Image (cartoon, rainbow, N blue to C red; front, side, top):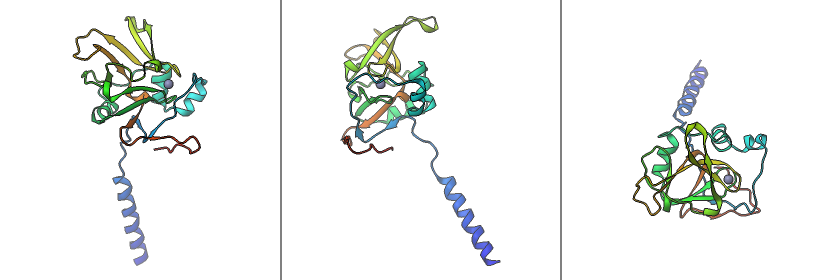
Length: 187
Ligand SMILES: [Zn+2]
């Protein structure tokens, strides 16, 4: 009888500690390692992209989707300190906290790319609007849109309105060069 009580007590303890486990995973990927930069275009089939991206990353990056404004990813973005933002699909360096500003629009905003050659734009006529789409030049991932001349007090008066879910953040001061031989650790 005593054994049963002990087992029950242990079980309820295990149950409580399971419940206490934090369940809110950070939506924007964060890494401590500066990823190796792609030298060429990164080309994958839709099936291959589905294997390396989460469903939400796939929807935004490969299907030109838009993440929910003011969501968990935006809250995470606002709390981040200095660092660099890379493409979640191909690791190309895209933006940095130096060009980050608070546009209060509900999406991560930058006034310029950190590495202009990795960011390209094209006219987007979808949704009955004339907009300029922002794309990763290395893997053609949809990143967001850029708007000009809105009157922001920034050096460019451009707003790169970017979906945070397609970015990977490496905090400044914590970054290490990824070893080519070493498998990069999954956070
Ligand atoms: Zn990319």
